[in-house]
Structures are given as structure tokens and as C-alpha cells.
Length: 240
Ligand SMILES: [Fe+2]
Image 1 (tube, rainbow, N blue to C red):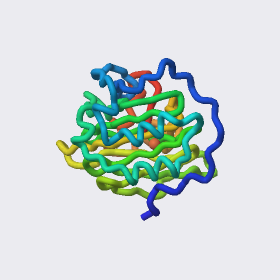
Image 2: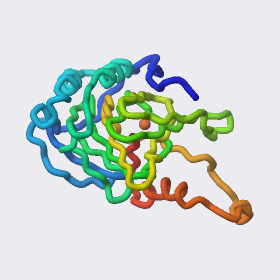
Image 3: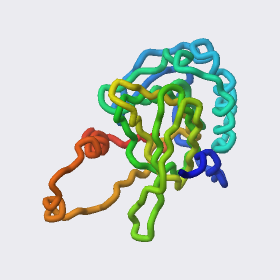
Image 4: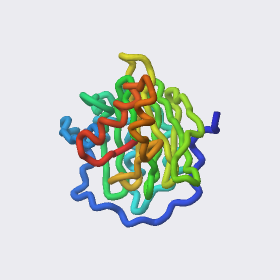
């Protein structure tokens, strides 16, 4: 079992922020696999989610990319339950849903809601500091590394219980899933600095010949469906 995933920040390269104007702090909007839909507005996140106020105040003060260890530390000390952010927790019809609580040019704060078997694509975090906390349920993080062949390989996984803080940045590659039984939801609170626009996604192999595929008797539908959903929409992936 690899060590806790909270100390991978060695540097925070400077970065020109993506343009997000105007600031939409206070809104609560969501998308699932890039299919955007508005989920109702929250006039003031400090009123709607008072336990997030210290976090939002810090994030609003950012004028550059946040240090990953700082984001992790803030989440570690944050005392938030599912009921504290229930007003911003909506689930997607297919795939996990990203509900935006607040954002500026330099950060995005979201509640992600996952049904059983919802997964991100395998992705990295180029140019972004990303930290999230398990609020409700048990999440699973699978980590990967690059190999000289250009293919990736899994290097371990972690079952993340409520309160666990996961952090990743730049070349870190992982996948996050709700692997709990059907009917058991997962809620996570995410911070990105700056907001993610697009990240690299990965698969295990570039090409498998039809003959090789035909030689297998069974495929695993649950595995396939995790990766078909994003590409089927033709929209960019926005992983966790
Ligand atoms: Fe991620």
C-alpha cells in the first residue's frame, strides 16, 4: 500500500491563469462528463455554506497558483459533513457530477457527487494543484506511473474513508472511483488552482488487434462503461 497521497508537491510552477470572467463565486452549477447544466444559484456561499468560509476566504485571496501542501493542510483541518454542503450536492444521470461552489481565475471549489461505479478517466494534473477530501462514503484512488514504453501501469490503490485528503499535481496520474455497492453514494470536496480546463487522459494500450480481442471469451462491461461515457459525448474530460 503506498503512503498517503498528500506529499507529492515538490514545486508549484508559475502559470498564466485561464480566463474565467466574470467570477462566478457563489453560484452552484454542475456538469457531468462535460455536459453542463445549471443546478440553481446560491446567492452567497458564505451564508449557504458557513463552514466553508475560511476556505473560500483563502481561495479568494489567491493571485497565483496555490501550493499543494497548503490546499491539503486546509482540507485536513476542515470540519465539514455531507449535511453542511447538501445544498450543492446534485448527482448526475450518468457519471459523476461536478457542482461548482465558488471560483475565480485562480481556483475552483467543487462538490463532486458519485453514484456507485462512477469513475474519472485516468488522468494527470498538468499545471494544476488539486486536493480533495472525502466527505461522505468511501472513495478509491488508483495510481499509475509512466513506463519507458509510453504505456502506464498501476502502482497501487487506496480506499479513502471520510476525512481522507488526497492531493495531486502536474505529472501525478490517477483515477478516482466510487467502488462501493450499488445504492451507496460518495461525496467529495475538491479544490483546484488554477481551475482545470483540460488534462491528459490515459488508457492501458493504444491498439489491440481484432484477432487478439477475439481470442478472449469475456469482456468486463463495467470496466468498458467507465471509459465510454466521456468519449461518447464528444466533450472534453474534466477529471477530478
Ligand atoms: Fe485527479
